[in-house]
Each structure stands twice: as C-alpha cells, then as structure tokens.
Length: 115
Image (cartoon, rainbow, N blue to C red; front, side, top):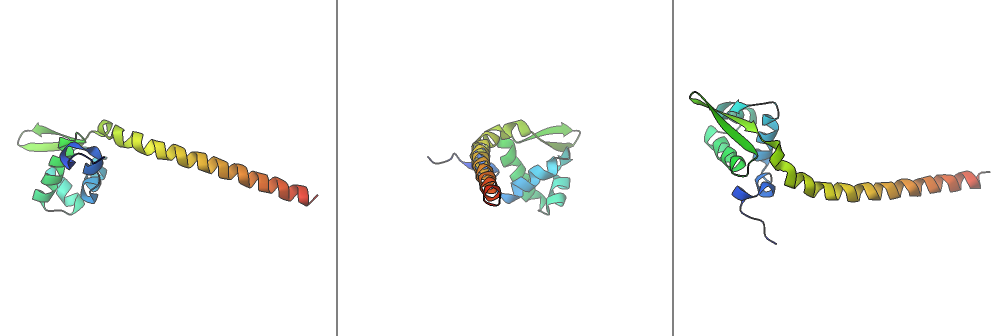
C-alpha cells in the first residue's frame, strides 16, 4: 500500500534527514526559524519549507510572539511512528530472549560436561 504524500504522512515527513534534524533541535524548546536554520545549517527559506511540512503533519506547532514566529515540537504526533517501531522492538526482544535462553543452555551443558 502506497504512503500518502509527505504533507499528510508522519512517516514520509520524518524520512528526510533535515526534518529529523529540525525535530532534534526543537527538543530543547521553542525557536525562531532563523535560529533553527542556523542550528541545522540550512538557508532560512529551506528551513521554512521543512517546518511547513512538519507543521502540516502536526509534528511542529507555531505561535506568534509579536513579529516573531516560534516553533515548538509536538511529540504526541509521533505516536503512529512509535507504535509502528514498537512492533519491531517486540520482535527483536523475543529473539534476544531466545538467544539468551540458548546461551544459558550452552553454558549449562558446558558445566555438565566439565563435571
């Protein structure tokens, strides 16, 4: 099944390295577009375009503070991504548990053979 366009899909929106970097920058709190552009080493118009995409999928909010616009992370909208990754995390944990059981069995066998 094909994914929706970037502007309406969290998965596609975070697929871009620049947008993920912007999200990382916003972990520390609200910032202006010029501060974000500086922090991610992008021209301001390019940072603005990435912020627009992130805003359209709900990952970033913007509020006016006089003439400035302050952008803030809205991490609650990462839930679909979190839920998707959690399925794989569970599968990995099951495999690691089986590996741990196998290694413990090998260790017991080695102790039994050495007695």
